[in-house]
Each structure stands twice: as structure tokens, then as C-alpha cells.
Length: 273
Image (tube, rainbow, N blue to C red; front, side, top):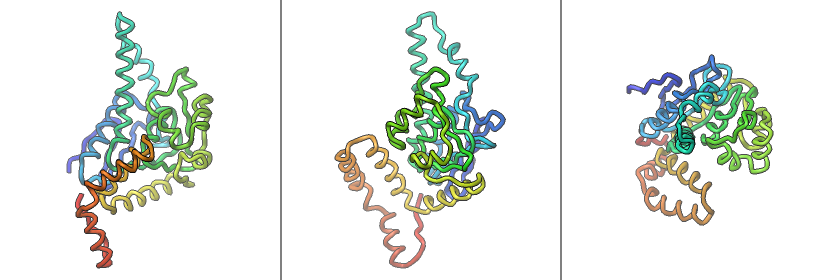
């Protein structure tokens, strides 16, 4: 299979596990204009590639990601320049919505996405990992909603997604202060699933987790992500109604028959993509 190639990312697909690595280590993987677009391209490819059953999102080098590249931030004013102030602001709104969509592609991807985080995870990087299904980190990881220190409101997902992970009070504290949160605190407040002593231990464990997920029913895994995300954003009654409709369409599947047969025959399950 010919994998897409990118200027700011690397993409690998092995044993049904797609691994996306931010690849600007000399810039602490700061998110320039190309990286935003390539993140969307990568996760749309993973979503539509049947042989990719689960994804890992990681960063090359010492830091996971230092957030938006300041050079890109400085260049935005020139990019949206217009003699009419209203049209310039309209262009800025369109740009913000597009950046939001680049990261939302991670959440939209029907395959589970596991974030493996080391070092800095700052500003836009935190927006990015809140789009993921699970987050694991090495002990040196540091998190911050940094936008307040740039005199701006975080606008690509953290303020909307983080409260579902750590609650309103803690989200507001971090957003108003911009303070750093170390890995131990991040795990304690629910941002991280687990922390590891070293990046190598993080990498091994996340890979094993991805392998375990890839061995499950692909149809059921995709359904789980769909239903969990829908239920997060709707009432309990709406969520129950939605999963009833989902299973009315998807429950009686070849994967269900394979699971039952494998248990009866005491063998490992084998699923079509």
C-alpha cells in the first residue's frame, strides 16, 4: 500500500495500527500552517482506509507539541487583510473554523485515536489531544492552556472538550491562569489515562493497547466511538435512543457471528476490515 506523504508528519501503517507522528522536532513540533492541514489529511485517510483499525498520535523528539507556531500566528493579520474591516473579520472567522475542523478530524475519525505524549503539550497541542479517545504520557509531560498568556481566547476545541474530561471548575482555573500542569496532576484530574516513567515505556504500552483494540470487531469499535461521542453531546434519553437505533442496524453482523463461533470453538477471532 502506498501511504500518503507529508512535510510535517510521518505516517506508518503496521498490523492494522496507523501511527501519525508530528515531525518538526527542531521546532518542538509547533503547528505551522502545513501541519494543521496535514493532520486533517492524515486522519481522513485513516478514517477511509479499512486496514487501519486504530491510530496512535505521537510527536517526534523531546516534546509532543509546543502549540501553534508563533510565526503562523503573526502572519494571520496579513492573511486576512482587507480594506473593509468586516470582510477581514469574516475571513478570520472562516480561518478559525477551518483550524477547528483540522483538529476535529481526529474526533470524526471512526477509528479510536490514542495520544502518546512526552514533554510539552501546550496551547493548540492540548486542543489536539482533547480530540483523541485516550491520552497516555511519560512522566515529563507538561500541559497548559497557554492562550491567556498571548492575550487571546483558546478557540480550537479545548474550552469545549476539556470540561467533559476534567470538569468545569478545573478547566476554568487552567484557562484563566495558563499555569502548567505536570503529568501526575493531569492523571489525577482525569486528563490522562496513565503515566509512565519513560518515553520508551509509554511507546511500548500504547502500542500494546492499540494492538489489543485492533484485534476486536472493527464494526463494534467504530460503533462504540460513534455512540460514546454522540452520548457525550446529548441527553441520556437521546443517547439511549441513538444506541437502540444503531444496534437495530448493526447488531446482527458477521462480527457477532464470528465472536460467538470463536468462543464456542475456543479460538482467536478473525474479522474482516
